[in-house]
Length: 136
Image (tube, rainbow, N blue to C red; front, side, top):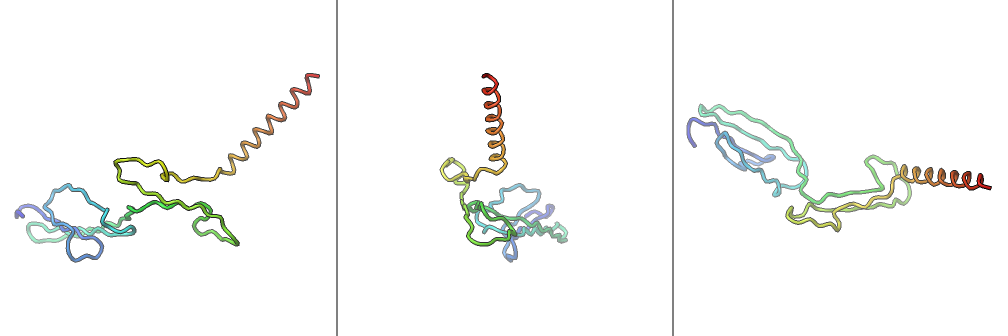
């Protein structure tokens, strides 16, 4: 490394061996695919040409694994008895091809849609009855 540029040491979590040692300014691709899903800390230690050091920590969350969708149970629900659960897990794939099967989570029809359908059918029945009864 040249003496007129600062250098940075990149550490993940509590590793003592740096992930990379780079001269600044630098742009690089940070590959998180080798990290486990969950909370991590990127610790950047900079060293100036005069020997002074600075530290910056960045907390981040890795979510490379398959997404998990659960319908029928929410966070902090109070439950009793038997619960019907719908669980789906799907991955992003290899980003070069798109797989339709299993890539979407099926969901039940929301209650508000059922209410709209019932109101529409009721209005239609009322309109039909009043229209045809007035034709006599």
